[in-house]
Image 1 (tube, rainbow, N blue to C red):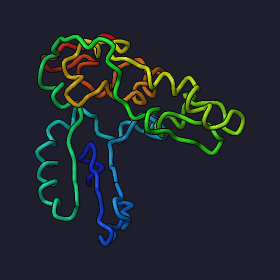
Image 2 (cartoon, rainbow, N blue to C red):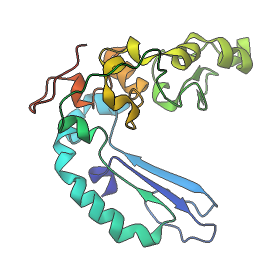
Image 3 (cartoon, rainbow, N blue to C red):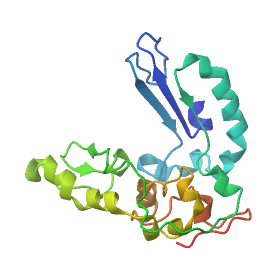
Length: 211
């Protein structure tokens, strides 16, 4: 299935598109469907062995490309690939990215509000303590503008994340990686995205970053 093979597939369905059963498709104009490999949250933490390791998916890029070509006619847009694949293939290249902000949608154009009224930068933080006080007490404007979780996400620079501030890959679509994956793995947004090969000891020739 796409969930087992892909990193992300995005489907934008035309208004009169048929319903694709089993994947939560919608006939609404501009509907977007995303399927991702599992993150270290919820039940995944206790069942990590069930899901493929990111490194083990490197050889599937050709399969994903084949699927994308095969099913492209059924979608307005179909995207797929392996995140950070180049970091598993090429050595870490040093450069300077002074004061470069991490480019994450969380806390900038995205937020998640849970049933308890607590705002977090994105849905991946919903089961963590990285949230605001209840908007029922402080108001949603105050939560958005002043909550620590929101202000930190908007102000984090690459130089605050080990290795990112000197990584040439930062401007190559990475943007500093996912801050939620850092928090879920290490309890802080100031660590590397664990799926990047530069962040962990690697079996290839890449120089690992230092945590």
